[in-house]
Amino acid sequence: MAVSSACHFSGNRAAMYALRRLAVRHSRFFEQLYLYLERVMVSLDPVFQRIGYERLERPFALTESVLKGLLFDCKMCGQCVLSSTGMSCPMNCPKNLRNGPCSGVRAGGFCEVKPDMMCVWVDALEGAARMKHGQIKISVVQPPVDGALRGSSAWLRVAREKALEKRREAPPPDPGKFAIARTFPQARAVEPASAPLAVEPQAALHGQAARELPRANAVAAHAAALPESMEADRATPFQRLMPYDPIVHAPPVPPPGYKSASGLEHTLRKGWFAVTAELNPPDSADPGDVLAAAEPLKNVVDAINATDASGANCHMSSMGISSILSRAGLGVVLQISCRDRNRIAIQGDVLGAAAMGVSNVLCLTGDGVAVGDQPGAKPVFDFDCMSLLRTLRAMRDERKFLSGRRITTPPRVFLGAAENPCIPPYELRADRLGKKVDAGADFIQTNYIFDIGMFERFMARVRDLGLHERVFILAGVGPLPSPKQARWLRTHVPGIHIPDSLIRRLEGAASPADEGKKICIELIRQIREIRGVAGVHVMAYRREHLVGEIIEESGILKERIAAREAERSR
Ligand code: SF4
Image (cartoon, rainbow, N blue to C red):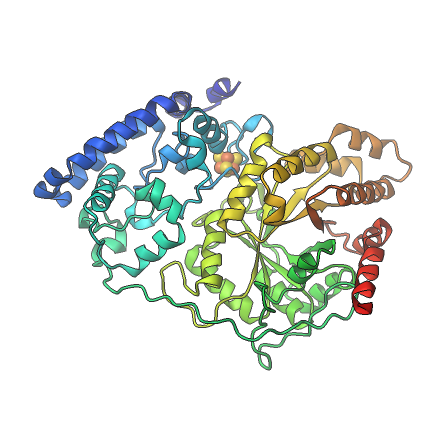
């Protein structure tokens, strides 16, 4: 089926695609070949040093690009991780994900952005399963690609890095490189080219980096002791914070044992069933529109998600919405999509958001630009959600940017990620969740759950892996407005699975909108019973007014009031 889909590609691309998939099918053979090649390259290091890596760079890069291009459809990122990606080059992923797959994989394992192509990461998982060390290596969180190394020889880079380790030589001091190697230590251990430390020959550097000498200062990152705790004021059964004004307040400080001053974190650590909901961002510059949309949510949720151009459509920014809501005293989850900003912009945004009182950040890879209303926009995808999580965790816990530069006041944020239990590869979704937890996720919000059986199977695997004890999982739910919209969502929005039985139920109802709400409440009650689920995330597109009714009728609100009263009486 997958090979026949290649027929839709034009001649050359179809041939490359077929070869790429052939390499995945023979990943075990290539794994052995790569190990052998690596040993040969490392043993030749003394010869390479005598000739000079500088002189060797161009001929090696050319040979590598021809051979790897033919065998793997390689895009020459210079930081080859093929042995960790089942011999499927991750740079063929239209989002350039180094830690995929994304949440938009289509039925049958086809790509969200290029529906004629098999998902590069579905192939990667298949290839990794055939390899001796593939399963372990693919679970390692990889750093973002260093653009300065594009087009250079990864084979020579591996030789330099391994030879450096073998000689037990101290690498030259370069704070930027050290910071990445320390932030992604397992990646450096399994794929030294992904986080290199050795001196790069000038010929291997691309663009501006080629004109700059490596920096020579040692890393000096020392985390300071946490300041005193500050409890948030809680006026309703759900968490409400004091209105936060950066002019008059210092940044919120986490209580002892907490990572943030977030009301959401507080609820989850208390063991109360948490509720978050999505606010539909206005197409307007009026803060009043944000406050009006938040009004029906503010007393029934622990935090409000400010979406970041979801579906690749432009609206008021998540940063703008988060700062308006924080100043109104509401808990917010700032969503950050890797699609639209590079690592410099995102790290700065997170500092800015924390300074505005934001305590929760949700790291997302983001939908491809093609699904939005401006398909000609340039996709960035400098980070993917895993490398973003790992970077933000280092900013918070180690007080340093990805460059290694020190942050004086770190962003005390509770870190989240999304997961989609209802799309392929189903059996590996929980394992992928584990990778996100390793990368730094404190909580997870899932995509819509309409198929409770599928979600139960996912949660069983989550429990088998012990992940429910390491991360708080909030299941995504929402009211379907009509059978027509349910079908539209299923066809046009990446990553949504709605069983036929639910659509038939909506069709047979006198009032499909009421039936959609009823289904949502039933799902919440069923989800509440699943061990390991810590809450729900309600997404009611442009129908925020329904969220309160859904939460109240589901019984969660009563439970929360009882839990708070029990705590007060102790
Ligand atoms: S489905 Fe997602 S992860 Fe897979 S190749 Fe396409 S964009 Fe990349």
